[in-house]
Length: 315
Image (cartoon, rainbow, N blue to C red):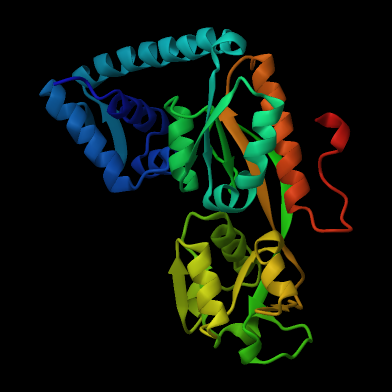
């Protein structure tokens, strides 16, 4: 049986963080998943590697040896990535791109064609995933770039904000067409249909609720979904209100299939980020691709009449 290098990485992170919960947050795993990785490593070496004592984590003698080599392997992996990245101008025939569901569904279909015209020698392998899976893929070298609606919190990743999209609260016209501002506290009896935990929209809304000393538990009915289209369909059917970036419901608003709701507490926004592995220097082609994709996304998410975050002459 081969050694699981990801389990080794998880083990090193537990030792560095001195915490299973902090490791889970940094590696975008659940805490039980971290425990399983450590258990798998202990089974592989047939030896205990960690001791939990009075809330503290200590290395066994065998664990100390494994940790020493885990550090060496991480350094070698970083050197390998840097060596290969220096040749990327010549070697990158395929850009391995991971995008969140919003970017994959609404932004990249239009961008891909212009990207292929601009860089005809570069193919794009596009994967549409949850943000935490994109972060994992970047850390493990599966992806070259990621587009997410959540800013990563990991020392191994670097991010660049490429735009902020206003979030629109909306409901079905069948739920009333009153146009005055409404307080979020007045919506607590109204069902809310929202993206699942971990999605950027979910984070922005729950962060906003915290500023009002509220949580989703204060709402009488909450429905969570991984599907943007399903959320729109439920709202159109009068099953509750939701919120999405303006560009995602622009057509439905124009067609009056849904109507906007204005919050007394002010507007919300969602940031979008270009994410890549942190390293000493990116090859020139990567800088060019980052700037080009960032420009196109920023243009698509910026509402009419609003100044874009990125100027055209940077393309």
